[in-house]
Image (cartoon, rainbow, N blue to C red; front, side):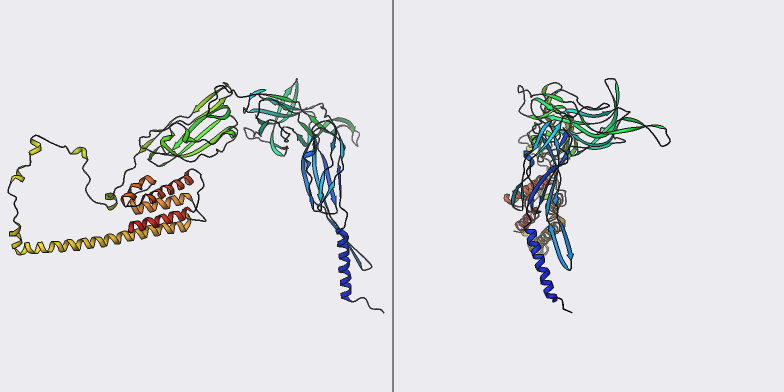
Length: 610
């Protein structure tokens, strides 16, 4: 009996075989093929176009922008690899095939013989070309018992004025659709230069039995209903779309095409018992709609204000504010609402600082308003700069009223306010005690007459004091010697106590500020509202004896009285402005606010110590 090959020889043979197969696989010829599932279609009836690459799965998809007359929708793309292993008489053969497949859905937009041109595909770093394919495209035909109808609520509008398009699918109640395939709508399919923007509208009320169908890749809610046309009754499915023309002139709304399977009629048959019965005859329908033209007028140049917002339609504006009783510098939340029949998504950011009357307020930064077609809500934080402010002035905006065909200025109602002055805190308030100052108006000056010379009988009596006689007595001498010593000791004790109190309050306030920043007001969990609170708490504890600090104005003069430099006062103003903008205005904070705040407080404490 002869021995078989050594195990290591067998292993080397298998490795060499795999190398040969791998080389053969690597040398597999790269080719590109293309095909369609139908050569004859109707306008609006989708069909599939597929490109298959063999020899490699490293493929760059082609540019389908050169396909004229078709709407293209990618469906799938990915490797198409296979591997097979064959064992014959102990010999193993392994074969690896690599490929790549791309599938598209094409929809013809016009009738005639349309050609899908040769496309360039980069496969394995090499250019390959697909073959040309001719497709016969036929005009769709109307069908008895079915209709696809388009209607506009207005046929002539201004640039920027919304118009409502209603799309209705109708059928004879004796017939009916069984399966929806596709609604091809050039207006929504990205056809070039349609001249309009659009938004599918949701039903105004809750639909009990909604029908959700895809239109140009978007889910649209269709409503069931009934309609009468030319004396015939139909059941309907319909949806509405708001169109906003972007340019003047005639805008064509090309026909849409609906593809579905439905009942075309009935045929009489008999069952197994010979009884007569009617069976529905199913058919695939490609149903065209009517076409429309929208006439769009340009906005008049004459009388157009410089402050025109760009809104076209019919609108109303209102404003609310809370709270309405505040102190100078306190935040007030102002909410402005604009509603009406117009595309409020076009509303630019509203800069209240440019509106008359708002110069008496500090206003948070302008930002884009969250808006839909019919409603926009703008929120700002305003702060009264003086206690003389009696109201938030009307908010004004200029629009073009499409109904009156003229530019109008809309204004909200003024909002009454009660603004209390912010009391100036003095060093007497900080240290406590002392007598109330006498109002200057209560002291009258007399330059002549009896009141000017009058001093009273008490002061006219003998009030002479003999210092020498007082010092000659033991008690007087002791009192004279003890008084300087007591005064010196009292002054030293007071100075030491004051230094201890200042040192303790300084260390406590500064340490609390640092701990608060480390606990959550600093990075990486920085919160402008919390940082704002930490700063105001430190200032109240350090400078106002616990009285609330609302803003920079509450402590600016106190810092100057304590000898703090204007540089540090300006730095505090910038800290307040940045934190208030972040907290109330929505502006993003810049830099490391926690580090800036900590450094400022440390510098101020050092200045106070000196």
